[in-house]
Length: 395
Image (tube, rainbow, N blue to C red; front, top):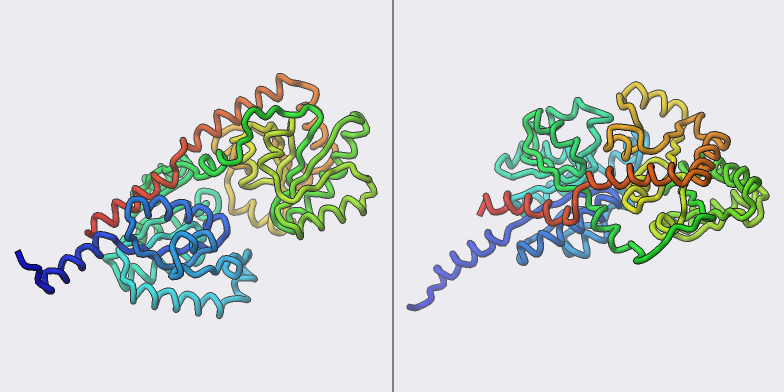
């Protein structure tokens, strides 16, 4: 049978349609890492998938040159910072919408970053109602802004959430929701040290990954270490810095406190320390989930500017502030918030870990049970399968 150009064109058109097109938007480094994992898994399902959008270096490496790397500029925090950069954001928004019009993808994949992404979803839904919109990594509306939920139900076709307690929140509101598990479970396996044993004389200090966070919490951690060393001369302290800039800042604080070589500051290495330390004190955030996965007994500390805390307290109606305690729906780890995040209380909590092996084991067991709720390995693959469903529904 002969091959006609017209028939060949139709075949190539259908092949292109089967390969699919996805436009993806992430605006922070964590979203870039998780987005890259999802896109990698999606490429396995659709080798010819066309990907465009905006993210960071990791997403660009997977998606190709049509994925712009904008996270360094896009990841601004706070209302004032966003307003200062309004013109820049407006220009990026218009450019991305123009790219979307040209590409006409079957699926818009949004990763966290709700301020920008929900506005972008609104624009796409208005102009291209046939586009399927999938959201990966739910904004923490259950903590901050439940008023956003009806808007998300109206705009989105599916929510892919990381925590099991998020599923009923969106489902009950009428949005198709899939609990895919937390990608940390996979990502941390690469950092697991075979056969490692905790050192009874090593305490981990984790002051956070942001400059303001470190400025508020690390001086308290230095004083805590000082108080503990006075009672236990053989005790050692290690503090991993999230960047060279923060490492320099932390070393300067230690020098100003005149405590000699009391604390060893390392460039990175938090995952290693979580497995080698006997216990620790950790700034509220993702690191607390990482510690749970590695089984490090710890107490949580949280301190922000008082106006921010008061405003947040009016908005947030949660019993606990730590992700592990929220996930467990009980206090697995002690939380020291604002004025309570001070050396006497924190050193007392660490003292208990050091003095009472049974207490350490009890907390470790609670962390293990909570970490199990994050889902098994394969979060990116499960998320990719959900996106694949919408791609195939268009084929």
